[in-house]
Length: 547
Ligand code: GLU
Image (cartoon, rainbow, N blue to C red):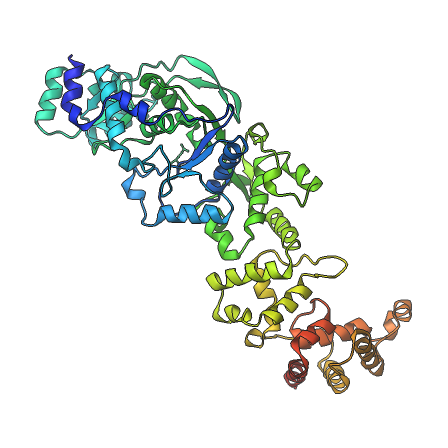
C-alpha cells in the first residue's frame, strides 16, 4: 500500500501546512519553571453545570497559583449540541463566581483559534501524517454495519468496539479503498491502533495517584465523515499545541485515557500530566448519584444566580469540596481572601464529592454576616433588578429606608450579627413585610381572638412613636398587666398556670399584628422603621381582621 498516495488522495497537501509550521506557530510557552498551563474545554451547550465551576476553579487555582496560564477552549465539534450565545454564558457565569480566563475563545491569545471548528486544518494535517505513516486509515463502514458488529459483540459477550477482527476496514486493499472513494462512499478516518489490551501499565494520575491503565486497541475515529475531529483527536492536538501542561478534567474521561495515551504517542507529542477530578454527587434516598442536570435544579449554575447565592459563598463552598484541608484553613483565617489559600492538587478527593446544600447555606449565612448594609444593598438590588418581581425591584428605590431594614435584619451594630440571610431571594422575601406593597399577613395568634383584639387595641391607644425602646417596652408591659399577663418573669416561672401568659406573649401578638410573623428582629426598631402612621395602620388592620 502506498500510504503517501492515500494520504494525498484523502487530504491534499494544498489543504494543510507542513507540520513544522504548526510547531513554530505554537511554540513552548515562555513561563517560569513549575508554571502550569491548564484549561477548561466545555462544549457550547448553553448549560453550565456546577461541575463546570468545580473543575474550572481547580484549573484556575492551579494555573494562577503557579504563575501559569488558564485558558478557555470550546469543543464545538458536535454541531447538534451547539447553542447560540453559549460561550457568552460560559464567560459570564464563571466570571460571576470569580473565575476568569487569561486567554481563549472570545479573548485574545497566541495559541488559537480556540474554537475547535476553526482548527480543521491542523487536525487534517496530523491525520494526514498518521495516514502517511500507516497509523490511520479510511473506514467506509455504514451505520448498519457498525450496529451489526455491536449486536454480534453483545450476543457473544465480547468487548465492544472497532478493533481486531471487527475492524473491517483496517485491512482493505488499495483497490478496495480507491473503489470506495470513487463510488463516493462516505468515510471516517480511524486510528490504526498499535495497542494490546493484554498489556497494562501503571500510570500516575495527579489526583487518583497510581492507577493501572490497559493499552488501547480500539481503532477509534479521529476524523468524522464531515472532516470534524472527534474529542479524542482534538484533545491530543489541541492540548499539545496550546501547550497545556496539566489536563484536569472530569473523571468520566478516565476510561478514554488509554486512547489519549496512544494518540499522543503516535502523534509524537509529549503526554501532559493528567488529573481526573471526581464528580459531584448527592444522596438520593438510599443511593449516592451524580448531580443530574435533569433531576436536580442545583446542578445548574443558573440556580445559584436565580437564588442569589453570593458568588463568594459558592466559591468558598466549592473550595471545601475541592481541597480537604481548606476548611481547616478557613477556620483559622475566616477573613483572608480565598486566593491566599494554598491550593494543592494532592488534597483533591479521589472519589465523589458530596454536595450538601445545608452546608452551602451555612457558609452563605456566614458570608452574608460579613457584608455591610451597603454591600448587602448593592448585592440584593442587583439580584432584584435581574430576578425580582416589580415590587421587589421597587423596594430599593428608597435606599435610606432599605439600609435601615438591612441593618436591623442583619444585626449590624448589634452584639452579634444575625445569620438569617442565606441568599438574596430568600432575604428579599424575608423583608417583604417592611413594604406595604407586599405586606400580606395571615395573622396566626396563639391566643383567643378576643384577648388579642383587646391587647392590640389597648396598645394602639397608648403607642407613641417618640417613645424610646424602654418607654415602649414599659407600655407593652402595661398592656400585659392590664390584661392579666405576667410582667414579672420570675413570678411567671414560679407559677405559669396563674396567668394566661406573660409579657413576651403580648409582644408576640403585637409582632404578628405589625409584621404578620411570630419571629422578627427587634419590634420597637421595626415600628421605628415603618413609621408612625404605617405602624398604627397595621395595628388597626390587625384589629379589623379579628372582627
Ligand atoms: N468537552 C469535554 C467536557 O466538557 C472536555 C473534557 C476535557 O476537559 O478534556 O467534558
